[in-house]
Amino acid sequence: MAVPKRKMSRSNTRSRRSQWKAAAVSLVSCPQCRSPKRPHMVCPTCGTYNRRQVIEPSA
Image (cartoon, rainbow, N blue to C red; front, side, top):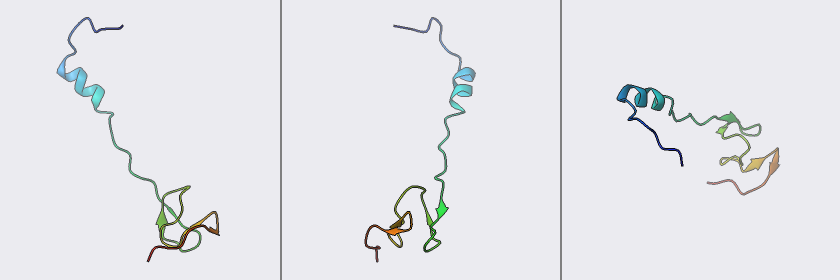
């Protein structure tokens, strides 16, 4: 099992962790109702996916 031979300095640790960013959720507009929705997901407003009615829209 690989074990570090020396303690990693604070600056090196912080430099490595500086890339740990949370990505913002990407949104696209629904082709039916033009409300923002996540890609490849059912639209929560109108209930369509791939231009077909899949679920009953939420009130």
